[in-house]
Image (tube, rainbow, N blue to C red; front, side, top):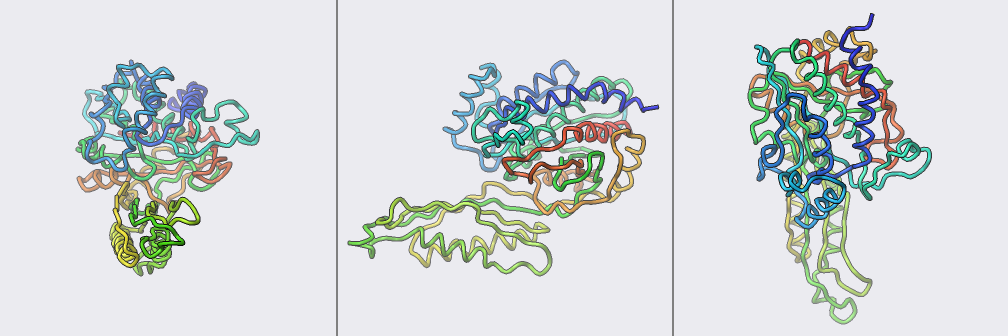
Amino acid sequence: MANWIDEWIKKKESKIQTWRRHLHQRAEVGFCEYETTHYIVEQLNGLGFTLYTGENVMDKEARFGVPSEQTLATHEERALTNGVPKEFLEEIKGGFTGVIAVLDTGRQGKHAAMRFDIDALPIEEAEEETHLPAKLGFRSTHAGMMHACGHDGHTAIGIAIAHFISEHCNQLNGRFTLIFQPAEEGSRGANAIVQKGWLDNVDVFWSGHLGIKPLPVGTLVSGATDILATTKIDVELSGQTAHAGMSPHEGKNTLVAASSLVLGLHAIAPHGDGTTRINVGYMESGSGRNIIPGHAFLQLETRGSSTRENQYMKQEAFRRIEGAAQMHGVSAQIDIVGEGLAANTDHMWLTAIPEAVKESDYVSAVQDNLSLGGSEDVTYMMQHVQKAGGKAAYMIYGTPLAAGHHHRLFDFDEAALPVAVSALAHLVDTL
């Protein structure tokens, strides 16, 4: 006979899918998740949680890479047009998106926190009939924005867990803090939530991700490994424009400086003690064939298997930026617009998670680990909990993938959503 947790989930499967598809249609990039934030609050109202929004969620000065006031205003105007009440929008305007939901059962027990990221990516979603969201009519309605990493699914999982905790509060123990985090992409939002104190005095912390690598639905990875530390860097080069024929000697060519810089950055020697990465993903300079360019802009990132290895890459990148600028007689402005730490799941979860989900009808296989090979903003939360003596786990919820993460054709199997809810609900029941 099915256990009571999964009997409850079976009754919620259609609702979980509805939440996911609604969120997918309203994809919003980091710190601009105004409609998403309002929708989360709507779904959590009346469940017995104390809900925190606006500047209660994040430390203002600890946010990385907040969009310009003009960009935020554009997104705010769209949210208002799309039905977000003006008084609610006033509360969260200026990039103060996200929701913290807290429920104390009133019974002695552990303080458990869970993180669910809510932001999308600046990608134009596919319109092909082979792309399921397009075929079934829940493709993103926001031009140039797409849930191409599964965060719509993560948010739906979080809403479902809130409903589970609410409906079974009388048989649960301890305190629960659910974190619906903005701006995970680019490692920009988690540190600001940590600095606001939401991860203080947390005993257990869980988070996870749909996909990463294609796995059968029902597979649960109890501990992701190789979560890389990272730094996201913007570089602006300022030189001097000039006529390319009559006075090239008066110009200070930022396109040449930027080109030299890209080659120099990608020539940084890897660190011998661990994995390191660097990538220049965007470069813009110049306005015409007969003009010496006087401005260039680059976006790049470094990564490392530990904070130490990433720091090495970061320092080497800074040295090359300054060197290229000096060599070509231009100036360089360097801005760090995102930063993430390295972290690992506590070893005890490799036993505790399989034990917790052994009765789950949805979890059919548990793996000890899976190499992430990328970075995750959640590491700020994991490290904060671990340094205070708590235990943290980062899980992977298996699903086939229509295309890789951050691709215009990305999609996951929605059957993975109740698997994730079941895993978290069974863990909640162990407290």
